[in-house]
Length: 386
Image: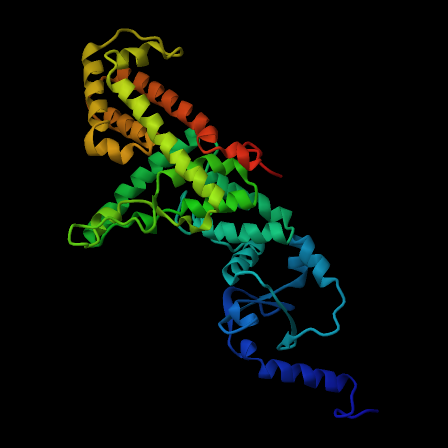
């Protein structure tokens, strides 16, 4: 019978322990607060320390859970291995992916990914995006559908769902601004909304066409990071900058940048043409009343027409128009809120204006595919996936 120093199973066990004890990554392992189960039978590691310097993050999982959710992991675990490192007697496997994505992917597997319930919260896109990329990479179809549905919830393919989110966002913005005012802190819009450029990149990489209209429109009306406004003395205007959505366009490729620049010009031209035409139309409200086939007018109110036209002219002139020229649907919805939330027009005329403004916005929405040349991506914009 061989001794511990002469080979055999005793020597193999001793070698494994020596490797673990001398491995800096093992000693510096940061255990995940959620995915670390005492009865787990495999440790997943991720982070820069797995291949070089930096921290290492660990997740103690169940091989059966990972195999049941992912066909790729099931196949990988079934491959023979001559040697596998271990940690406290449990096999270790290193993932080459960003550790935050691995964390969200594994938490999603265990039903512990805490996705915000409010639409378009700042962390949602990154959280869902990382898990979704790995769900596609490791062939986990049961995880793809619910993650994709979250993206489609926040970036819908229909105008009406998009408009509903816009209204909810305005309410949330008002609440947050009031809280910031009470705490004497600056309101920073970018702390509460996701970066549309990252959503565009994710959707195009994974060919999720249903979110592209909303994501590209949001991208077009966002300011580019690095374009912060400065005073004459080169002091950053924080109060003004914090009110402006900004986006990191570095994640876009050259074709995307061309599409964005051309699309922004088309949006501004379309806004100027449509709104100025309405502002100069003496029968603006008359058109709205008589063009609604489902609600024939009882009578036409010239006073309401004049007030509505005056409100529109105010929104389409000077600084207000310059700010909203890149956001025609936002400008029209702002007009709708002002007319609906005041005594500017009567109830009947307000309902007809609601229909008319929605009709204009839907026309713009339907043109977004051409505005941003999305057909060149060769992605079905209406495919809801598996």
